[in-house]
Length: 150
Image (cartoon, one colour):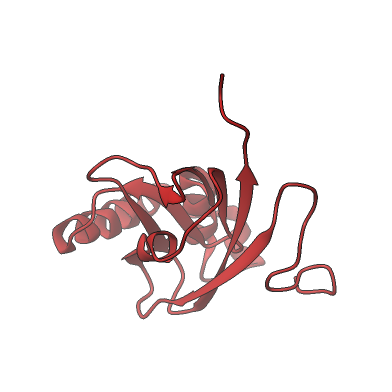
């Protein structure tokens, strides 16, 4: 839902700001490494709350690579295929599996920022998982700046 209070870079409260990032998927189920969206800029130290604004996509930290992406996509397909049929398919045909899988995988991440940079493990990457594409998607990012810990 877009509205006057959901601008692309509008402040959203004391100590936080909101930024919207856009991406597009090209397949119905597709894993995409979006780490570059967070390493290509400097952030305030603290945490980034990253939220995909859709109910048929997911976010997670994982390893990157074409074989990993194939595995993520294959496992996602098998997880939901074994659970059907879906009751809400009658009023929302075609993407019930995507809704359920997105709910279980999650649509938000908290990412640590230190020295202005993303501070995750060596092999950890921010992965976006498209579950009902191809589509243009929006990701909201809120900076939660913190004070130093004792």
